Image (cartoon, rainbow, N blue to C red; front, top):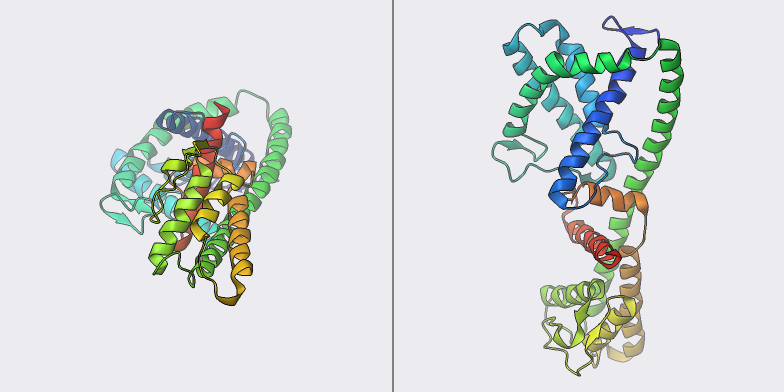
Length: 325
């Protein structure tokens, strides 16, 4: 199988180059984002030390443009086009599969659908020149350091591990999308349960108050100073640790004395049960899901109403990180 040729290059070399480019891309991205975020970040879709988009991009650019390596103009223009196309296609596929946007250029000038933008594409053109003229010879040198026979064995092992890692990562991304859906449904139920009470006069007011309670449950906040649009909670209770129990205490303050018709206690209990369910979903510990959110700090939900839920998970992750310190 490794002897099959594509564009007169054996698959063995294409796959080997792919993993070298993926590793180099992972190293670059992880160091860069770690510096920006102020803590170690394992960048990339899979857990292992590979950024697949760099592997695909590096190999594709070289394979397509290797015959133009002596012409800088063609290298730049065609490299810009190829890299931009790969970035766009990758964004469309990942958004379609997981309903989540992993990068977003919406705040950049001359962007298209937030998936690609002119400034990044211009940089990709220079990267194409760098890949074909500088990086590819280094990648070839690395791959040629070991005999083909041993390389084939190693490549086979890496492919198997990569496939397993990719599968688990895809499952984790799908679970994250499902988790956001369930959180959105739970929050909608919480809003709906409060609609007929004296908690607020409108849905926006109710949302503000419920969101204040949820935010309180994720942070270490003096209960006596928490404000949620229903006045300052008093009683000199001092500092209360965040968590479900403390959040319920605040929630009880919010719904105390609210009128629910002839099913007051049942309605109050429903609000509390829904709230506990929602907070539990926020705090579910899943390594792969948390790694995605940590690795892509600007990740956005494609469903507008779920963006708030994604923010809750990020807040929970940051809160856990602070407590560990």
